[in-house]
Length: 285
Ligand SMILES: Cc1cc2nc3c(=O)[nH]c(=O)nc-3n(C[C@H](O)[C@H](O)[C@H](O)COP(=O)(O)OP(=O)(O)OC[C@H]3O[C@@H](n4cnc5c(N)ncnc54)[C@H](O)[C@@H]3O)c2cc1C
Image 1 (cartoon, helix red, strand yellow):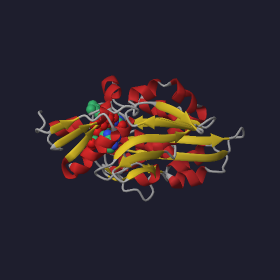
Image 2 (cartoon, rainbow, N blue to C red):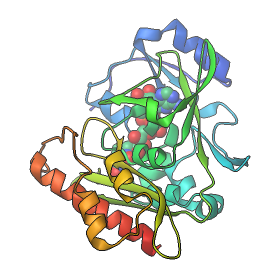
Image 3 (cartoon, helix red, strand yellow):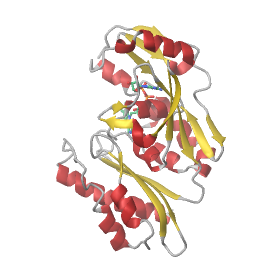
Image 4 (cartoon, helix red, strand yellow):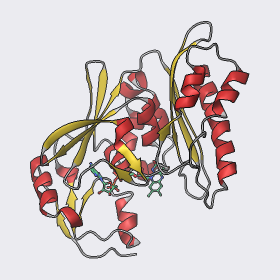
């Protein structure tokens, strides 16, 4: 389990990192926490000739509050998110999600930006940030841009990132009194979601749903918003029957995958069960 040889570069500035990326475009990989990249390199599923380690670039590992939003630098680790008092208070869906990721070792090294860039179809951050309508800051040789989360993920480990671009931050809203939950079904062997469901919702005192956003992972080639479920519940007084009927629509028009963890019929059923449970968990707080 030894990776192929590569040239290693650890710049101290983002502009140097971007320059290196544009010089080695076709054969370079960014190293963040290394929790996905290194296993792939050791199995020779990824064989970059050049590695740019962004871990020594200052200013990419903090969580700040700005204009009713929270900005997480790309190098913020899963553990930082899990333990952040600011996030627990202002955007609890993020710590709720972080606690479900892998084990302590992976959470200590793995980063939110690395996970988002990796676009793993079973990753836990994509559904959470979809449910939060997050924006992703990307920096490349043509400058900076903010990409809406809905537009970022294209398919199996594919995103809109260009080869010379770095994810530099994730922006999420302060969720205030909204109710949130993240639930996932995991096989004991890996910890990766067979299905994971993130919910952000607002309900009034008489149980009427003012708005709801649901992000789902593990089910198809990329995380997605369950828009049909959101439409069925918005503006309605919620009860168990309505939640279950809506949850049953969460895989409509979705190409549900089949793998070692189960058939597509099984996974679709599990998705319906977990969508209903996640909504109930959010309501119960
Ligand atoms: C045993 C194990 C269990 C795991 N279980 C889970 C789990 O339950 N849920 C889950 O969500 N994840 C899980 N993971 C993955 C983990 O969360 C990783 O931390 C994450 O997928 C990648 O983040 P990273 O910082 O380690 O990125 P890296 O491994 O360093 O990079 C991953 C990929 O993204 C690219 N990249 C990295 N940073 C950037 C950037 N800033 N801009 C552009 N491209 C970038 C890299 O070039 C590489 O292609 C697990 C990993 C392991 C080893």
